[in-house]
Amino acid sequence: MKKVFFSLAMLFVAGLTFAQMKNVKDARAIVNEMKPDFAKAEQLINAALTNPESKDDAETWNVAGLIQKKRSEKEMENAYLRKPYDTVQVYKSALEMCKYFFKCDELAQKPNEKGKIKNKYRKANAAAIMAERGNLINGGIYYYNQDNSQEALAYFGMYVDVAESPILADQNLVKSDTLLPQIAYYASLAANKMKDFAAMKKYATYAKEDKEFGQGAMELICTALKEQGDTEAWVAALKEGLNKYPQNTFLFSNLIDYYNNNNKFDEALAFADGMIANDPNNGLFTYVKGYLYHNMKQYDNAIKYYKEAIEKDPKLAEAYSNLGLIYCIQAQEFSEKATTDINDPKYNEDQETLRNFYVLAKPCYEDCRKVAPERKELWLSGLQRVYYLLNMEKELQEIESMM
Image 1: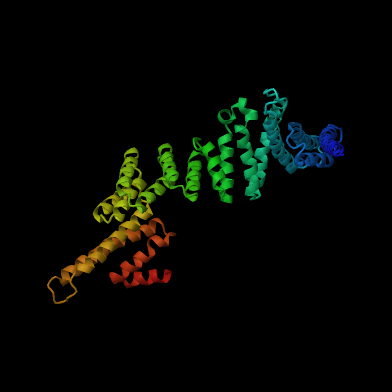
Image 2 (image 1 turned 180 degrees about the vertical axis):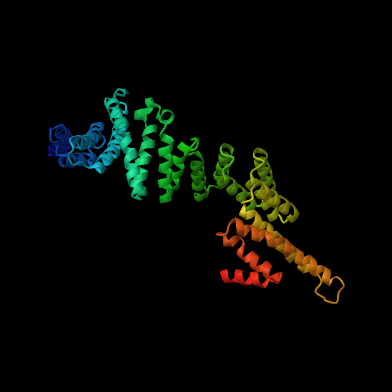
C-alpha cells in the first residue's frame, strides 16, 4: 500500500511540473498571436516564475522576457500607426525584459549533466537588450524629471549594469559606450537623493575618468565614502580626485579640513605647498595655507598667506574675513597683557597699540562686505565689534540695525 501512495505522490508532483511548464508554453503561444492578451500571458508566466518546479528553468525566464519584448514592440507599432500608445509601458517593459533575460542567461550558463554549457538564448536575448537600452535612458530621464529617484536609479542603474553583464561581454560596452559615464553619473545623482551610498559610489566610479562628469563623480564617491564612515578610503579618494582634478576646490577643502581637524598640520602644509607649486596663481590654495597657520596660531604666517591669497584672488571673501579675525584675536591677546592702570606711563601706549589692531581689522571686514554683501556671517559681527571699539557711532548704528 505504501508503494502505491508513493507512486501516486510522484504522479502528483509530475503533474504540477507539467502544469507549470504548460503555463510557460501557453504564455509563449499567446504573445506570438496577432493580438496578444498580455495580461493573460503575464498571469501564466508569473505563476511559473514563482513555482519551485519551473522557476529554475531558463525557458521560464526567457518567455517572461519575451512577453515584455513583445509588449514594447506592440506599443511602438501603435505609435508608428498613430494610435494611442503607452510610453511609460515601453520603458517598464525594457527594464523588466533586461531583468528576465539576465536571469535566463544565468540559468542557461549552468553546465548540463555532461558538464557542457548549451546556452541557446544568449545571442537573441543579447540583441534584444541592445535594442532596448535607449529606453532605459528614456525611462531614467522620465522618472528623474518626476523626482522619483528610486525609479530613476533603477533605469539608469540597469543601463550601466547591462554594460557589465556576461550576456553582453563581447560588446565591451564599458569602453565602447561613450554615453556610459554620463548615465552612470545620473544614476549616482539619483542614488545620492535616496542616500543610497553604496549605489552612489558604485555608479559614480564609472564616470570618474570622464572629462565632463569626472569631477562631479569624484565628489560623489568621496561623499559616499564619508557617509559610510570609511575614513581611510575617503581620504584616499580625495587624494585620487585631486591627482585627477587639482583645481577641484571641494576635494581640496575636504582634505585640508580632514588634516586640520585631526591636527595633521605638517601633512596639510606639505599638501598645500604641492598644490601651490602646481598652480601658483590659485588664491584658494594660498588661502588654505594661511588657514592652516591660523589654526596653528602662527598668526604672522597666517596674515602673510591671507594677504597673498587676496592679491591672487581679490574676491576671496573668506581671506578678508579671516584676516580681520586674526587682528581681533591679536587685539584680545594683547589686551590680556596690557596695563589697565591709567596712571601707568605705558597705559596710553598700550591703548594705542590695542586700537591699531582694530584699525587694521576694519578695512578687512569692510572689503569682505564689498566682495560678498550677501554673506553677512563673514563680516557683520566683525564690523559691529570694530566700529564699537573704535567709537564709530554712525557706522555702528547702521550695522546694529542689520543685526
